[in-house]
Length: 244
Image (cartoon, rainbow, N blue to C red; front, side):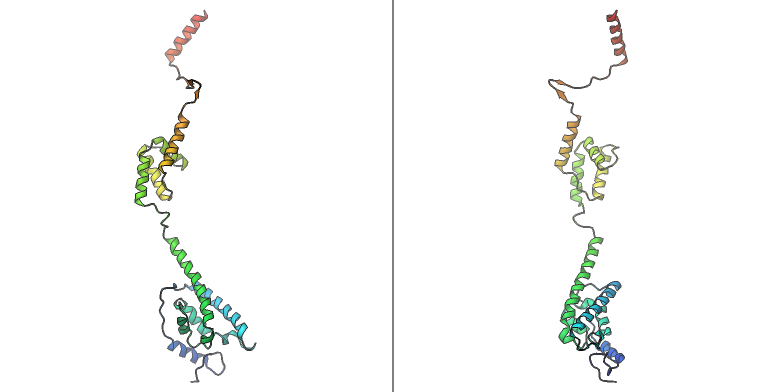
């Protein structure tokens, strides 16, 4: 077996022997929980980003134009980093994961900063996903507020309850208990706060102002109730007698 050096891309080293040597001696690292294990699509995206990164870095430090970026960061080391990248919460872990990389002592900090930025973005995706799966505490209506809101609805009038139902495009039929249950179910299911005492009082005042008859001077402009058939007949007879 030839002497194992740090880069399998060199012609004097057998790549298969080098890869077998590094993979057999590399210690198994465990995540400390800082980063979530990446999904398949995330790993594929990371591999592409890391490949572009090594091309960019190697273009700045390569000694001659004939040597490709494989000389700087071999593919098998890059794959090893991508497969277990979630354990790279520290620079030492990355160095351990990239065991055998020729430039690990001089350039490991650059990929570490690059990977930390990417892992932080991926971690935010996992955080947002968990937040979307769990209902927000702000949108939840606890039992106490629901009970208080229902009590306020029960203490108001049927006219006010029906007014809220019309505003929410709910049915206005039924007695007071049905109206209260209908409104409470709507408020809880839609996470809309129950009406406050001030809102209920304002709604009640508005309804009273609409129903209150208009007053002109000292007389109230109240329409007279319709006359009964007998009264209309008597009035007609009196009118005929006066005409004669």
